[in-house]
Amino acid sequence: MSDGRPHSGLRTPDSGVKSWRFTEALPPDATFPTPADSHKTPRDQIRPRTVQKALYTWVRPEEQQDPELLCVSPAALKDIGIDPEEAKTEEFRQLVAGNRLLGWDEEKLVGGYPWAQCYGGFQFGSWAGQLGDGRAISLFEATNPETKQRYELQLKGAGMTPYSRFADGKAVLRSSIREFVVSESLNALGIPTTRALSLTLLPHSQVLRERMEPGAIVLRFAQSWLRLGTFDILRARGNRDLIRQLSTYIAEDVFGGWDTLPARLDNPPEPVDASTPKRGVEASEIQGPDDAAENRFTRLYREIARRNAVTVAHWQAYGFMNGVLNTDNTSIFGLSMDYGPFAFMDNFDPAYTPNHDDHMLRYSYKNQPTIIWWNLVRLGEALGETLGIGAQVDDPTFVEKGIEKSQEEEVIARAEKIITQVGEEFKSVFLAEYKKLMTRRLGLLSFKTSDFEELFSEALDTMESLELDFTHFFRRLSALRLEQIATPEARKEIASVFFHQEGPPKLVTEDEARGQIAKWLQAWRSRIVEDWGEGSDTVPAAKDEERRAAMKRVNPNFIPRGWILDEVIRRVEKEGDRKVLDQLMHMALNPFQDRWSGEVHNGAEYQGNEEQEQRWTGDVPRFERAMQCSCSS
Ligand code: AMP
Ligand code: MG
Image 1: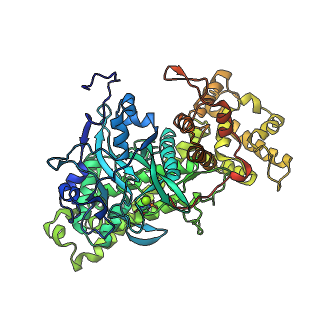
Image 2: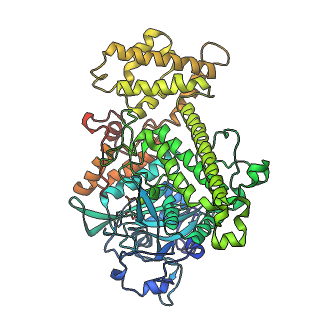
Image 3: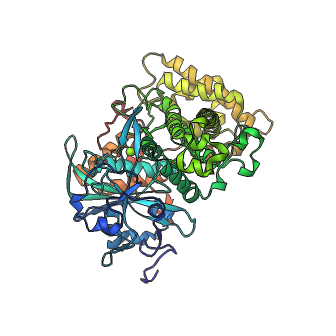
């Protein structure tokens, strides 16, 4: 850095490594062939329309008056590689509001320029046609110099684009707070997600939804903002050359090269790492006559399917629901994304959907794995001919003209077979990941086949019938000492820690409820003893402490539930409260702590609001459980 300001070795957005790989590699909307064409167009003349044969349109954010920077995620600063001091500068405030374009030469009209992506999607199972970034505008890609991770930085709520359809290109403060907080919360929980750097209030922007609401902008970032819906639109329009070009861009530029992509797995895979899904065997290991027909596009399909399997396993293990799992909200990178009516589970109920308009329960908790696979089958169809053509994928006639009539039957059969095989892999990767996560959440060191039925299913059934809180169940279990549950009487006595304040639901007696929990605790205890007891019939106190600490590291004490977000939104919007957002973010970014106020954080004692911390980690107020949300945002 050249400005002489104190810094931590990190950099400023101005000086950092920026790129525009996406726009370099893929074709723009022909209405504005160059950034200069777009820049010279009055901003209010860039209006919704159909965009053909393109993956994006050059478009700049609208100017914002007096943007107020409400909150910045320290974790996001670190991951992008920006000096925390930088976030306090005027340049940063203007950048994250969309008022500064980095890399663009205003005089000469050359350089990197912002863009909005074109995509389509299946919404609630029906083809919806062209969607696209209707209110999101990407600025540039930034590479963290230490981790080498490259992110695409994007403003949500920055104004109209050709993809705004009948809407206004704006985002309201309410939904911006929700997206900002949940992105960073999921990341802190180890769940693959798009991220959020900053939240900006637009004081002069009033946006009409069900009522007039303040407008806001979130700067969000991801390794890729491409969605399954990006392929859907190309397929719907028969743009087979663009499907090939897009696939190549994803393989080479997003995933780091074709040869890193996985070949077929014959055996269920090893459990995979949460943040970076493990790749399968190397391409060179492909064997057998059948596999010889498997080309690199099939491996790309596998990679995308596997990443999504890993992510949906996290949602199921942590009780998270996106609420609108349309193909345009399903990431090619396997990230949780596009947060509308999302929620975390309160009382465990597999049929719960946070989406008020989801009458068929399509996007309910229990349906998430199936729906993600349904979306991935749409991707398989978009890639169909490239999968099915097998070894001839680079044959010049195929590349230019597609399959011949005589090849049809064989190509379709092969594509179907591949999709089915990838479906099997999706299932096994999902299950392996789910088992790994649940095993950890229950404090076990190993997985036994019988655990699935006797511990996982029994725990969920118990939670469901006794209306227990899903997150509290795991956290309170983590806090128990084995010596507290050594006898049947002790287990029954302590069972009430899992109840809500008002006790068990009216349909069961308290004694029955305690009995049911005690029975499960007995089964759990014997598995803990088996895993941690080193051969004896009990676990030494020191080992048990180790087990409790390990459980607390994976079972959050804090998650941003709907009622907490509602309270924060009200206080920020109506009461002008500014502290509360930082307090909420501090808990969301450090979700596994027992307490926050008074704990040392970054070398200093953290001063929050202790009463609030207890309230937000305690019982969910009775009438605010399992809230639902409409899609209007
Ligand atoms: P979502 O329901 O957020 O996944 O959005 C579906 C589509 O509608 C996407 O193409 C969005 O960009 C677009 N969209 C949603 N809200 C707005 C808005 N206020 N202005 C412009 N486009 C929007
Ligand atoms: Mg969307």
